[in-house]
Amino acid sequence: MSITNKRAVYFILLTVMIDAIGIGLIMPVMPALLLDLGGSTLANAAIWGGIMSTVFALMQFLFGPLVGNLSDRYGRRKVLLVSLSVMAVDYVLMGIAWSIWLLLAARILGGITAANHSTASAVIADVSKPEERGANFGLLGAAFGIGFILGPVIGGVAAEWGPRAPFFVAAVLAGGIALFGYFALEETVTEENRRAFEWHRALPWGAFAQVGKLAGQTRMLVVLFFQEVAFMVYPVIWAFYTIAKFGWEEWLVGLSLGAFGLMMAFSQGVLIRVVIPRLGEYRTAVLGLSMELLSFIGIAFAPATWVIFALLPLSALGMLAGPAMQGILSRAVPDNAQGELQGVVSSVRAIASILAPTVMTGLFWVYSDEGWFFTFPGAPFVLSAFLMIIAIRILWGFGRLTKA
Image (tube, rainbow, N blue to C red; front, side, top):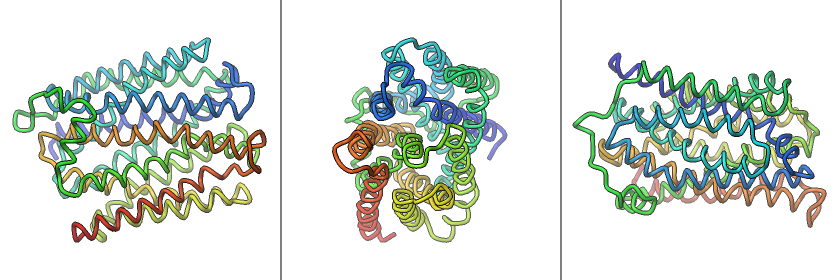
């Protein structure tokens, strides 16, 4: 990898880390902020949290392919710098929100800027050999994991000044990374891998149709979809579940997220570089999904706090599946369509994020003290386990189709 490419990778890893820090900063304080802005009870605040996550994801679905196609034509640098700058403004809006509707508007803007993750993935594809992409996509997961370690720590300190303070910290960090990128990032799209912009491919359905022409890739995207729906139980339900079942305080929620981030960083940054060469991308994906299945079942029925922390390494092993599946997808498309592919992957994840928050928070409410049935806050994790069974079955069929 050349010096220019190394600088690009460093910036990309920092960008993804900032995305994760932003999530880690605000997740522990989001229940308190929603309660302050209009959620009368924890269960009602969880419903509002689900709505916020849904509109955020809807914007990612609509804009992911567009941003990816723009980066294929005009370059990754411009797209990333603009998105980071707008992201900084979005965090300020969240910090000053005086109503739940302004907070909702800020999440809409944030969903548009979050499409930068697809462009970040496209940069990794640009600078990696095809056979190395699966492992290198793991670097993004590692950076995200490190961000999850730092985010709750920074957020916990900032929360001492109130539930709004972490948003301003996130704004400063996003703005700082944008400034760094302006001086450090060089363009990775060259004339060899530049592609003309086409509107019909920039719309979600057009991009899906283009990628769907590739043999077997629709099946892989379906597996990715089920995995993403299941994984959403963590950001959407984790804080509410642990508070409801174990009475955790905000600092303990943050500590658990930090521990998970540390293990995820090791899994995707180090362990995946050992596992993929030995098992291959397909078997690594099967292994990851299987570990996720076991962890979801364990968390759903965990009798005590220590069991949750004991299961975190198993959950982190499940993170091997995502980069492995991205590697399989990336090798199936030409170099001049990597941005488009990553935009499609972003949209698949966004569809999952649109559906999952409403389903997960609704299920949590149904099985809460104020719901319709008996109290069982682990119900969303049981649903995630069921989805993993479906995903493993489909992936098994993909392996037989491709003889992986």
